[in-house]
Length: 65
Image 1 (spheres, rainbow, N blue to C red):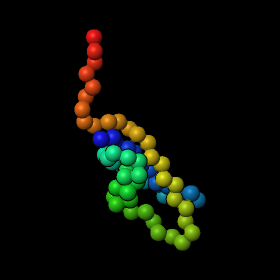
Image 2: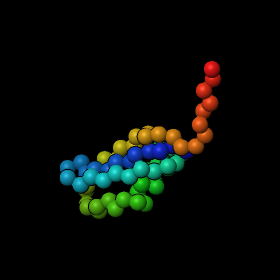
Image 3: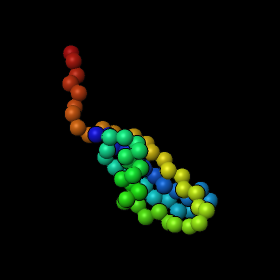
Image 4: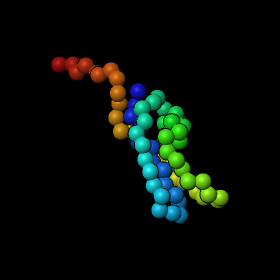
């Protein structure tokens, strides 16, 4: 599982918000984040969505010597 930071911001406004989600893909991260964040609903408003990988959760890799 991968930890994603999903950020939302208005293209022409000041509203911004972000959340951290754990899932398998970036598209799944956007879907989960949309359920958590209340995006303002305005006519003809553009929202910028940014997804970045912050880390990984799960199995640790063994280091060879």
